[in-house]
Image (cartoon, rainbow, N blue to C red; front, top):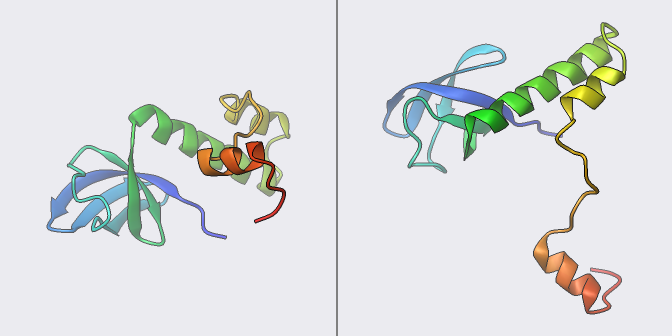
Length: 109
């Protein structure tokens, strides 16, 4: 499984950027988000930025990942996850195309 990390673009040269994130500095490929600018937050998977994030969302993701790491390391209790994922106060929603298929009576892919 691949986990996306929120990172902040510090400098940019073409499709490459120096970014800061949970593990310090990293070089990130921006080919999929050419509109990204210095100061933007991006969600990075395996060294490649996949989308631009609002600062609030980047912070929420970072806090959730930090809480999960603390629980896994045994340095926090499960309530840390509840606090870190407080924005998930709803049932998961199906993507529109799957909701439409379900509404049309489809029960399998």
